[in-house]
Image (cartoon, rainbow, N blue to C red; front, side, top):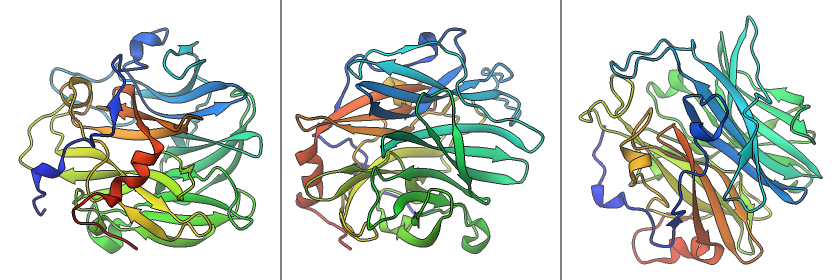
Length: 342
């Protein structure tokens, strides 16, 4: 792998981490499961709603970093808040999938569209990773609209139809054609949330100077006066890194990037920041938990005053919050320095 300049890896100055992070952890959920992270967040019917991934890793030996894949239980739970800062949860599983073929559902992303909440999620199966889309109005009853073929995940939905079609961002796994773990960010469209097509490459990993391994969607896009503002996750790998978590070795670092897409044609990238929006820097991002050096945004909420709340998983262990003003986010690619415009 090629080296990446280390001076790229600082969080943008316009971003402020919530001082009482994390906003949700295993201690906040009855039964105290091992990991609470990679949540989707939206505002629905007057309150904030969080769908969080919950992993019970009781079969994991943290001292030795030994893991037995797929033997720990995973489910999706929901939490609620009046202000987006303090959350309440019953801790009960609200959505899970498990049978002879399906191992688990996880990594939810929430989008409010047409008065309903659409949840995109990942599904581990005996024959590959699939992406799913389900619709709910009460967070207890879900109607599954579609499931992709393997291998695809990290799907997020735009909050309104564009030119009469639903639009989503996604991250396929083309290992055979690329010959290595190097994945890109794609876009597809649907007339009904069930049948998807017109798949297009939106952003390639080689276009992101702070990634040398893979990229993909993060939080669902938000609509601004300048375009669709959306985050993406970017991964760099360094084989000289040490243990970095509970596993035997963890060589990757996850950062958050940001870009702006055209309102009427989101296949067109107006601009992309050449530097990360957020990089792991705090103890709950870098030095504690399952996997060190991980930031993964799963929800963005644009408030009436222009504040953008960015919810993100940290170290694959807890859920955290950062904020920035929408105008500052839009202006990121106007700063001096190299830029990549499409």
